[in-house]
Amino acid sequence: MASNPMQRQARNYFLLGMALAIIIAGIIIAFLFMQMKKVNEQLQAEKAGTKTAYVLTQDIKSGQVIDSTMFEPRELKEAGIPADATGDVNTLLSNYSLCDKSGNNIYVDSDGSLYMNINNSKVTVYREAATDSYYTQGTNGEKSYIETVQKSIIAKVDMKANTVITNSLIARADEIQTDDVRRQEYNMLSLPIDLMTGDYVDVRFMLPNGQDFIVVSKKQVTVPDVNGAYLADTIQMNMSEDEILSLSCAIVEAYRMEASKLYVTKYTEAGLQEAATPNYAVNNEVANEIDKDPNIVQEAKNALSRRYSGGATDLRNNYINGALSTYGDTENLPTKVEESITSSQEARQQYLQGLTGAVTTGQ
Image 1 (tube, rainbow, N blue to C red):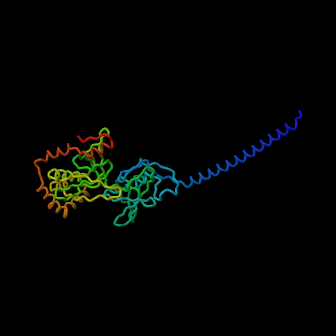
Image 2 (image 1 turned 30 degrees about the vertical axis):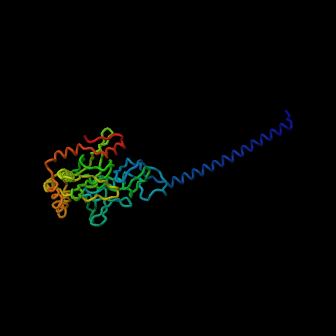
Image 3 (image 1 turned 60 degrees about the vertical axis):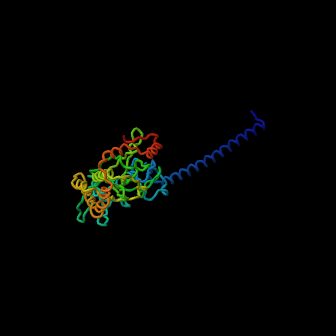
């Protein structure tokens, strides 16, 4: 059927519109394709510039013991990752914590190899995979096996979640877990108001005449809780046999001595601060017990022997024994012990009350 000019014109406009729509759609599709290709290329380039690093999943504070469960792997831009970051946190922490039985550190070199400093010389340490043993090698090829132990790894500084872990942020803990270490509980020490689990402390003994001695140094404390309520007057510490006997001696002498004080002080940046050197010398009876105690490792006996000789002995004879003679009171010793154990620490209780809503003493 013949169409009139108006119909032909309408059909031509329709066909022209369809052609234009197809052309525009093609241009848009081509543009989108080019954009998608560009985005994919950028993603590929970014992926090529990423690296796996381990980041913290929680906040930790200076001196806190850390382990691999506190980290997770994450793909990050390589340009933003510190040069000494690690892509294998388990290997890092395991190798970094190694030392020999005497406490000499086994270090991780920049290329991942292990070494020790022996007589101011760098000696390579090898790992025997078949036996998981470590050894050094002599000039003639003989192996000298090392009896290794692992120290805890701590944070040098406070760190927030998502911090990338690096060698410069961690350190070895000062404590080596020797066979004579036990967890001890004390409820007769004067504690800082804000002392909490994970803090590092010294236990000090102040005499009435102003002399102040360090009994044990840089111990990490645990504040026990019972059903969600912190114990206001009780702490737990891992103590070696010689430390247990030294602190026991100081506790008895503190109770015997009027106006003396056995107290705890916190480290402000435990991860960066070295342990203080104890200078409290026990009395002759405890010194003899320590010398004969088979549970104390020889290294500790040697260190204690050095502490009790020379100036430390003079300090005991001139100050501690003198203070005991002047201020000593043995008749009321049992009563004083009981009073200390049952007494409350109101300021500390108020502090802990504000944290948990519940607080109790060690009774």
